[in-house]
Amino acid sequence: MEHKILSWEDLRQKLDKARSENKRIVFTNGCFDVLHIGHVTYLREAKRLGDLLVVALNSDTSVASIKGPSRPIVPERERAAVVAALEAVDYVTIFHEDTPRTLIEFLKPHVIVKGGDWAKEDVVGGNLVEEVVIIPSVPGVSTTDIISRIEERLRSER
Image (cartoon, rainbow, N blue to C red):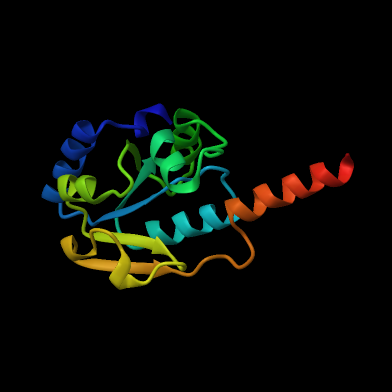
C-alpha cells in the first residue's frame, strides 16, 4: 500500500501518464480519521465514476484546524496507509491547507466527488473540473458519531 501514497509531484506524473492514455481521474478529499462503513461505501462509489481514484488526505495540522485540537485521532501516515489499503483507492496524497484547491489546480482531475453533506455549488475546486458528483452519505454513520458513542460508553462505565 505504500506505493499508493505519493507526493504531489510523483502523483502528478502518474496522472499525466493516465491522462495521455485517456483515463478518467476522480478526486476526493477528507480527513478519514476513523475509517468506517460510510467511508468505504463512499470511496467504492467514487471509484465507479472513473478509471483512477485519488484521495487527498488532510494532514494532521489541517484536520486540527478544521475539526479542533482533539482531532485527528489517528495520525496522518496511519490514515494514509489505511485509506491506501482499500481496493477502490488508486492513490493517496496528503495536503496541509484547509482546502484542497491548490492541489486540485495542480493535479487537474476530471471529477471531484464529495459526500451528501455538500452542495455542488459549495465544493472547493468545482469550477476547475468537468464534473462534480455528490454521493449520498450512509445515514447515521460519521466519525463524529463514532467518537461520541465511544465517549458516552466510557462515561457510563465510570
